[in-house]
Amino acid sequence: MTDRESTRRQVRERYGRVAREGEFGCGPGCCDGRQDPQSVSASMGYSEEEQQAVPEGANLGLGCGNPVAIASLKEGETVLDLGSGAGFDCFLASEKVGPAGHVIGIDMTPDMLEKARKNAEDGGYTNVEFRLGEIEHLPVADASVDVVISNCVINLSVDKPQVFSEIFRVLRPGGRLLVSDIVLTAPLPDALRESSLLYTSCVSGALLKEEYLKCVRDAGFSTITIHGESVFPLNHIISEPELINIIGKIPPDDAEQKRLAESIVSIKIGAEKKR
Image 1 (cartoon, rainbow, N blue to C red):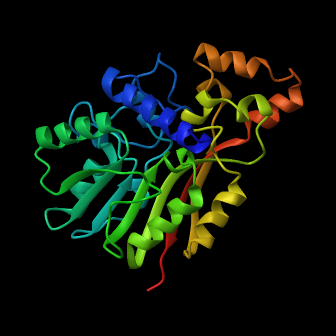
Image 2: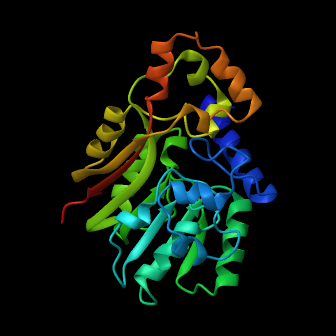
C-alpha cells in the first residue's frame, strides 16, 4: 500500500467511525469531546436557525466555517458539496436553490453516505442526492454544476491540485467555488507534520496559504477572493491524549509556541470559472 493509499484509508476509517459512533470533529475547533456539535457549529458561523432547519443527526460538528453563508446561492442552481458528511451543508443549500435546483453531495465514506441518505429521507429532501466518490475523481459530468462548496475537507486530500482541477472540470463557465478550509501560515514542526492523527484531524495535511491559493490559480480559476480568515487556538486541537503528547514534544519556547498557535488558520475562499 502506498503512502497516499494508506492516508486515504486512515481518513476513511476515521470518518466512518464518526458516522457510526457519533463522535464528531475534524480537528481544529471541533475535536474536544466536551463540546457539542451545536456549540461548535455556532462558533463556525452557523446560526441557530440554520442548525434547527436540518434533520437531527445531520450536524456532526464537523467543519471550519460556513461556506453556504458566502455562496450567494440562487433558486434553480446545481450545487456540489465535496465531503458532504451527514449532509448538513447540502440541506442548507437545498433550501436556497429550491425545488427547481439540485444539490449533490460527494463522500468517500459509505457510513457517511448511509447516514446522509437517511437524513435526506427523514427531512423529505427531494432535490438532494448523495454519491460515493473521491474528491480527486468526482463522479460528476463535465460543466454540469453551478456552484461547488466544501467545508474543511480539501485539506484531507492526498492530491490537492487534482481536486481543484476536478472542481474546474465539473463547473459550468461562469460557475463559482466557495470553500472553508484549513491552511498554514508557517510550516508545522516535524512532530506535528508527521502525525497521522493530526492529518485526519485536518491539520498536518494542510498546505501553506500561498500554496493553497496557487493550486486554485493553477487549476484555471480567476477572481480569487478571500472572504475571511481566523486563527484556530491550539487548545481546540489537543483534547485527545495522543495529540497532547505530540504537542508536548515541541520545545517549550514561548516564541515557538506563539508561532505555532498563530499558524493554523481557517480561511474562506471564493473563485470563479471564466465564461
